[in-house]
Image 1 (cartoon, rainbow over the protein chains, first blue to last red):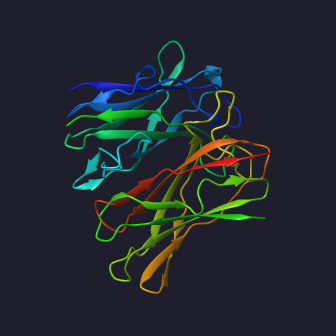
Image 2: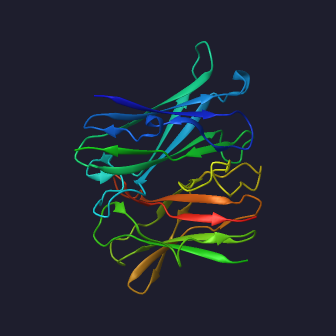
Length: 146
Length: 143
């Protein structure tokens, strides 16, 4: 069971926008095998004192632009027998030394859905309509094997 | 004010998967004060969801230039922050032998030119586990 970590960086407080950072696989989409997990770690690059206590992560999965026409699955992740195309998770700010990070539990691949996929991820600070509400997004790709 | 329709369909008999369809007429290029409206067609008036949840996520398109720093051309009205994720709910409207769910429009206010991708998920949360369908069409904006 391997864990593939998608590393993003939030530049700091502001209007939100693009997540930066290495993303997934350093430019080469990783290939998840059965029981592997895809996680997301977000680093806050602003002043630690301005970091939110918690982030909400929205995981949206779709077929990658390079996926073959024969690929019928929009997502390799399942909930029961149904595809998981959307999941929301929360992560708390780290409390150790150094930069503030947020580690999301991520999604586990159960196997049997080989293909090319895209994770469109949004990190959200705060609550819609409240002060400090901000969103950032990015969309790395990944592959799965049987 | 031009309006660009993004019309998706849920494949008959499916309990999740890929949506079919996309922007009518191909990749649109929005200018200031244009809007996007997403609709989803359920192929039957029998067994359709009581409501349909939408998950809209905006990101830079794969062909966006490296100089593009924005992930979305849309902003929240109350604080002008970038709108990357939006989760409205749509009610059913029967149209012939189908049911249509139309989500609230998104208005492009201008000033954020670029190449973008809408990753959209239609979610039937009225069943457990939820049924989900997704697709990710692209669109452009100019100043």
